[in-house]
Image (cartoon, rainbow over all chains, first blue to last red; front, side, top):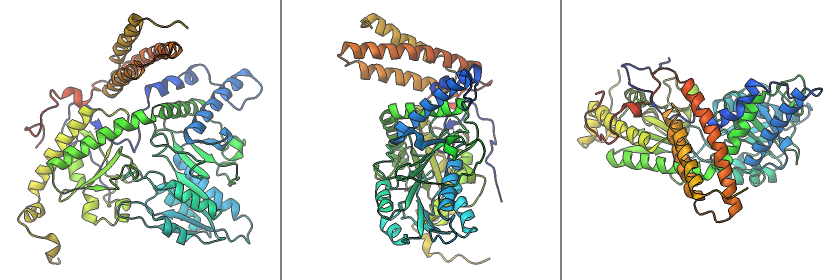
Length: 422
Length: 101
């Protein structure tokens, strides 16, 4: 069963955009860097026989260098352009285990990931399960963090080949302990991959300090263009993988296909801006997130934060709140002046409660009442105040309509009620 | 690289602000205004002549970019493409009876 939230009555003006985990606006500075490659510089960067190719190749290499610097890689040859984080995740998660299982006697057929990964990681793992690989899906705590001790216990010496844990969760903003996971993996000679689509450019990521062997990046989550991303694949100690794309042998043979110059240059520009302005952007987003949370919770009781409150474990630009006794879908429908989502865009057509929130142990009704507020570089204080105002107004109104809310106000404990079966 | 005068720094600041207003998008416009003001505030304490000159040169390059991008942004703005924030008269309308109920 699917439903789509559509405008029911005319709204004057475009809604406030608070869905930056789904995608971000392309920064005008990024577009400015890209435009010459749509107007004059159209050479195939892999053409070696003329200047059209040489010039675009040079600019692609500059972009690769920008990505390298943002993630602290040693060598820019470890950065490979892809069509996005989904392709990077698929290439790495399928490619690494498949490469090391080429020998039929190999026992390295075990992968560890978490229950709260993005769909593309989980689905790539499901495919591997149908091909003779075993996957452990680690549970998370009630704030969404993985327990490094249970990760250690899940490792099968000589069998586990890959651990994949996302850096920042797209629904609740939890930051996983990457450095600890990396240390554990390195000690056990297991490859460590992190889906950093929501983290790169937002918080400091250092593939050396964190012992990350493979990492996925998305362009359009960091104010870059859609249709481009990158994967980091470590050279020392060398990580090998079986490519998904075969062909011209571009990108060290790991991702054949002509690199799209305008997109790669756009990703490079987005990474440069993210690196130069990381502290500036973070401070802005943290201030707005704090403002939103404080004002909403000051006016409304029974608002629960999904994810950790500790800023060391939570990215403030992803604020996920459950409004008890209010249905998230109804709230989003009422908040038609705000572009919001209750979870990932990929599953926003479904009425099912989020699998991420259920993995936190949230009851279905609390998972159903959640809304994700995504704040970014271009969000303004005035927008936050506008949204706070509307949220308070509509949550109060929807609660007034709710018989459950009325019972709670009368002091009835809902968990003691015996609902009759129909 | 010569050190820019106080007047030329001020002129650059005003030109950047004016160019920022060229964005049709509310969010880009507000960001450009905020970023310009914060950059000038952060650079106000620069003592080293070379650093001041370098910052001024960056600002000049940014101005050219800002003018181009504001123009493109305005040229390609779909009709009626204003933010609800701009079409809402006051921002301090807390819990008063507004739009839908």
